[in-house]
Length: 172
Image: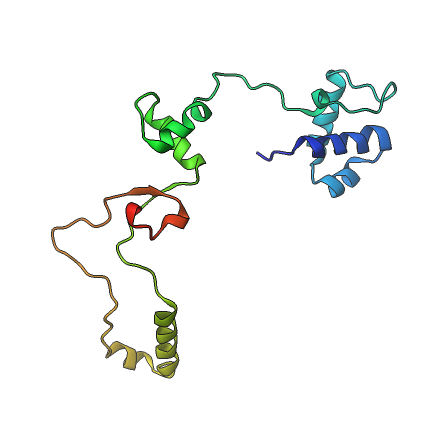
């Protein structure tokens, strides 16, 4: 679902009912689809907008309608949850808050990424052996392969963190 801000909706309403442009022209200017423009005009007229009486577009003509259902607890407890996970709200609400804060559930980082020096060494190595054939490569031993530990399950631990915290010790 695409959300358009109030200013864009007011602009489209002005272009349609006051300036008199058609939907294709308005779509080119605002990015709103033809169906959305028609719905916007219908709602504005339903909410009391009359272009014959006044060309002033009030917020009530273009604002979102109130949503049905129970208000979200997410904003109410957001700061508390981010400081410490409380038992006041459900696990699903906590999950939503963590996602809204930009956090992701990821595998903990065990190895740091490549440094610039390591990247340059790897590139120079690739360039040095770029002429090798498939047979030459098959006879080589590569030491950067993943290790295997028998009777051990890898990757079962997860941490919540933002992408910027990838190498922060407290979330590794």
